[in-house]
Image (cartoon, rainbow, N blue to C red; front, side):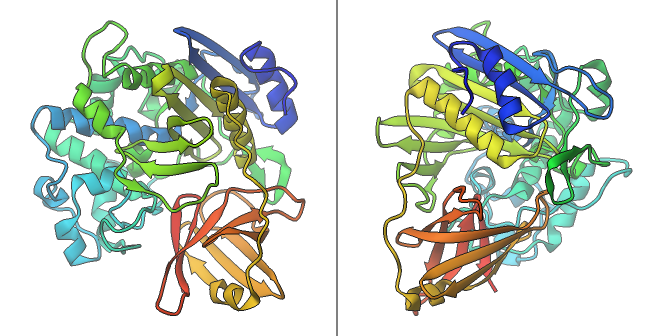
Length: 458
């Protein structure tokens, strides 16, 4: 826990935080009581130097998905898109490997991660020319379904690349231009870029990843961006923490920008913040739902509703959280891929803003060995390979990350409640809960829900 409290002295807090968590740099902004506070600290690029300031831009990753959703909802406002029409009505060339799913996946399915499309597909398109978003959507023709359309929730990057392409086709301009003309400009986000060529105009952070399995040593990755065709899902946009707050305020203030001009209808703002599906129960202190673009968390004690989206790219992590009923929000950007740091930062800032404790209760129950053996098995997605083993009265898991630049992780799984387990590292540190779901007639789960993804039992 950092020594300085964020609401007392945000700059001191930021400076202390990067030391405590050994990350290169941080930028943070808080909106509370109609007042903006910003801070930044650390090194933008360990290879070249440069001090992070509040004017520096960082990649925001998947927070972009809420922006792409906003562009689609503007088209809904204009009567040009119906959320419940099939995607193929707007994109005639849209295709995935499942023919029936290709015909039935709707725009709504894309925007709330219930399409079933395997989402973590990151082909190397560096050096390629032309419309890489369109090219990416063409490549989706080989992607399988993770689950039946509309029946479950599994995070899908590919779905938002498809949504971005829909914006291009219906709007008649590139997604990049739509972001600039319909989002950045009307919201006054003049310290935000969507095209990497514009980086040279700003003080820009570089991402940092672990040097192999050494979590104490950082290197700048050779490839600064993930698949460019995934731009609408979050691989290219970068901005200041303050510009993220401008975006957040429009979503808390009924779709009006800071000049009190309507940017998005109040109906679309409300629809984006409305639950479309409840996620598997992975927390004992809150329930999670998917909205359109937004994630929705409902806390029990005290009662509190939080809208959020995080992001992770090649060496960056980010978080944007809003408390609409309090007109409060915070944004954080870090240029070191250390998930424990962004989790701690999010917890401390939300705790300070909402006076809420995010600590999960410790597991107290155990499962019989017969039930543990039913859970044991190998589960896989495009993103991870998870091997679960049962020995005596203990369940263990090994996670191999196939995309994220993280070393393999060995975990003890301690039973919390039906299907839900708390993972602990060898050092005794607790990770976010995992949930085993969709048991067959024999009680054998067919999926593990981990980090928002469904990994299917092999």
